[in-house]
Amino acid sequence: MAPAAIAAEWELAGFAAAELRLFPNSTIDAAQNSETVSPAFTLQPELHVQSDSGSDRFVAIPFLKADQDDSRRSHGDLRELYWRRQGDAWALLVGLNRVFWGVAEARHVIDIINQTDQVESPFAEDKLGQGMLNLQYFAAVGTFDAYLLTGFRDRTFPDDDARLRGLLPIDADNPVFEASSRRRHVDWALRWSTAIADWDIGLSHFRGTGREPRLPTSLRADGTAQFVPHYDIIDQTGLDLQFTHDAWIWKLEGFSRRGQGRRFIALAGGFEYTLFNLAGQGYDLGLLAEYLYDDRDAVAPPTRFDDDIFFGFRLALNDAAGTEIKGGAILDRHSHAASFSIEAGWRLAERWRLNIEGLAFHRIPARDLLYGLRRDDYLQLQLSRFF
Image (tube, rainbow, N blue to C red; front, side):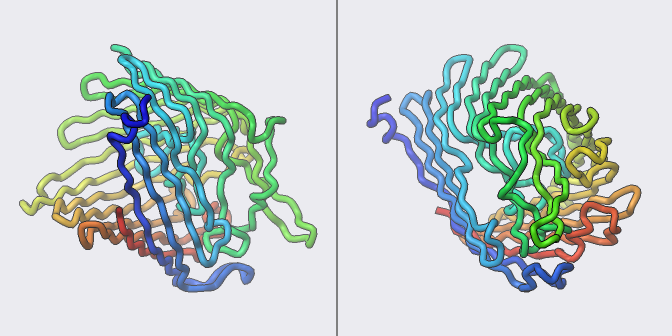
């Protein structure tokens, strides 16, 4: 591909953001940082280059975060760095990329290609870039994807003295791997997806090092307890279904997994119903409800989604500022523990946007996975400048 063709169509974009996290409650552990206000700064430039023919595309998206109170949250990553060639009935991608699978709102059950960036988002919303070779074939019966995944990425965890750390510190620097090749183990995945009338269907299988670590405890030299991430080789078969009709969207996704104790399944299913042009004001209100189930045993990685109900809403004002508000609650049917989340965002000017995010916990019992976070309610303000 000639350099002139590359230079003909390129775009530099991205954003820089200043962030404040406000923690209204004191910590549960005196070793944790007790600051009420925690500032951070994010920089994410994006470079997109496309050949004149449109058959070749190069993307680079680095990510940099600096946090005053959590040294592990101060980190850099290549979210995406890949070359993609598009043919008539196929596409080939080589490099680092982010791939999303699934349809559910409250929990992304089958989404397994990328590792979670847990210091950026407590509940698995942000992902690290994953090295891969991805071959796509487009056929009349659907799209077939084959992945070779190289360079395993460890899950990121908050520092020992940081908020949102959980009950015990996590020794993220000394993980244990089932694979003798550790991070060099080559994983693979296959996926078929198609659309039939009002149905969207996906079927997938993953074989390799699981992105969810088990967290057995060990003792430090000073006698204090800690969690040590343990990454197992797993097989996971996943299914996702979505049915769209008028204002209704019905969703179901789930998997069956082997390799972390006995074989277990996990499911998330429910609906989204949208009220369009609410009260004649041009607002769109989506009402969401999902049931979350997981029957893993105590040997597997811990999860909070064993028997839970999610209720939420999504409000789009469809105004010039692009105002969007989303909120929800996840309720444990047995312990009655609850977590509440809220997200809102709107443009302040052509290149400026303000986002607000909140997370709160309620009635968390000692046996619940969220017990170590029960005083880590926070409100986050992020002011972004796009370029």
